[in-house]
Length: 126
Image (tube, rainbow, N blue to C red):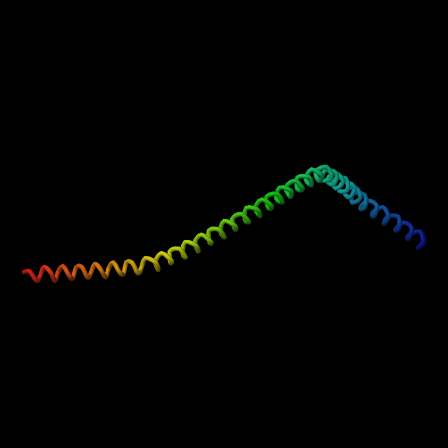
């Protein structure tokens, strides 16, 4: 037996060991590929209905957003009208105060004068 024969035997044994090691690995890769393919098929079947549901939900959110925008605009208009009413009420209140104040002052002065006169008149008789 020479070196070439020994090398061929060693190479043959190495190939047997490599093949014995690679066969389980290749079988595991094949099973993994089959599971991945089944998962992709399952996802492919579930994806279109999910996309339709997401599209439907997005449409509903868009509708709600538009409705909410309209309600906010109406609320803003109501607050503006309320602010204008409050300003008008304040202005009217100030005008009434300014108009009534001199009358009340005059009535108060007249009342004090009448009281003083009646006190003086009744004291004089005593």
